[in-house]
Image 1: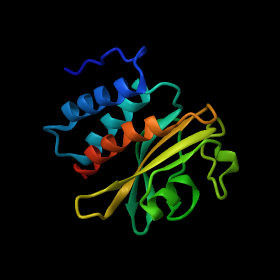
Image 2: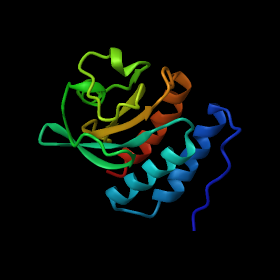
Image 3: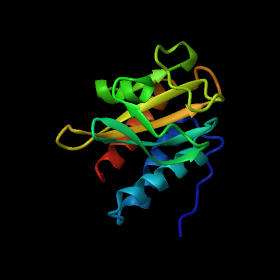
Length: 161
């Protein structure tokens, strides 16, 4: 049985390594990609403060298709190069957006979201599997410390896809 560790009073430098260790324990013996993404989304949603959405979009037929997530219902399909997720996927680069309302082409799936970070999921061969996406109702919620902590989490999941 998995038990959450107390993360409320941790700094980001302390939080993300703990989350990575918890994620690795959750996915170590599970070969199913959907199960692993579902557990990752739940872990992030419940352990990373001040989120209103955490989940995945998977590359299918040159577009991103909604995968496992936690939060309000979301946009189902996103073209590559469109919105925060589509741009991160197209560019194969992490994209932090402090104010999504100022992002050209932003796709408003949840009007409560004000900032976002999208991390491409790259397989070992460099091909794109999808995107890990986190939204917050706070402006400027995601910083370099979040990015540094989330990149290894995205890599751990991408290795299981």
